[in-house]
Image 1 (cartoon, protein in one colour):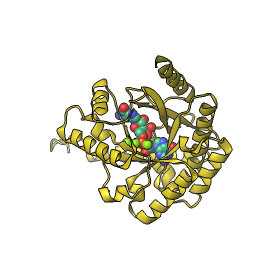
Image 2 (cartoon, rainbow, N blue to C red):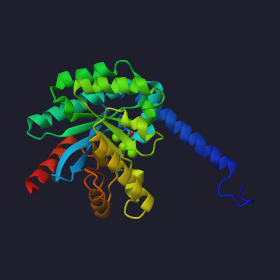
Image 3 (spheres, rainbow, N blue to C red):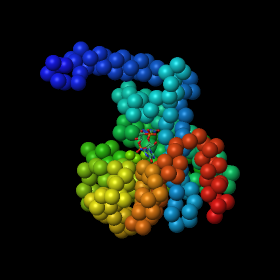
Image 4 (tube, helix red, strand yellow):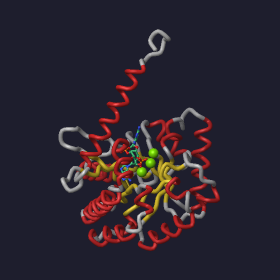
Length: 280
Ligand code: C2E
Ligand code: MG
Ligand code: MG
Ligand code: MG
């Protein structure tokens, strides 16, 4: 391969492949009993509301720190949980934990909405409505403070079933957000049928909103759609002030991203939200 001017030899490629496979196996093993051992935690990423200048919500993001292996990012383990079906159990825990935290903030006089991601397998699991009800009952949180984040891909193959499920969630009083919006393949007509409370604009469009005319046009179209539906728009992946200003000018209602804050432990999020309130 080197003689042909290629950067890697076949042997090197195979070694990289084997190493990758070994890592996967190692993580798969480490995931057994990880929940019982208390290796999962939720971090919370703040969401800024432009109109009030306050932190009005956050997204709960799963973190896994197996001892001896270092922190593992979600892209490396959510898929494994999904494949093995463990995501149902871990997801139910995340729902309970997020609801408990939202209730604690509520009692502390800090009404924050908490978003929680649902994976395809969780969404299709018949126990999900019961898990949501249990999380609500055990925590005593105002149901609307809990916001379920679903993606288009999750709802694609059976639209009727998805709509029925979303109605059921809404009947429980919880909120629903369409995550990573704009990168999927759903038609407008399809989205219009969904009972939702918010559209989360995918980071892909936010990144170039200051430079690309196309991305700006897409954001503008999503905002128009959201306004017609009477739902919030939350921009994901806001990393600098220029993007933030552009998004606000385009009519986006809320911003989430490293500029406002990285995903952080609950206590840090509470501190940040309190600071914003004091600043007025
Ligand atoms: P997501 O739901 O789209 O979450 C947003 C991701 O973007 C998070 O990555 C977040 O840390 C990252 N992010 C936020 N702001 C910025 C920014 O300004 N710049 C950049 N470059 N990235 C930003 P994270 O935490 O690695 O999570 C990745 C994905 O894993 C999530 O995407 C979600 O699909 C999944 N995930 C995370 N937690 C859970 C969970 O509890 N359950 C399920 N089912 N999926 C989860
Ligand atoms: Mg999300
Ligand atoms: Mg997202
Ligand atoms: Mg995303």
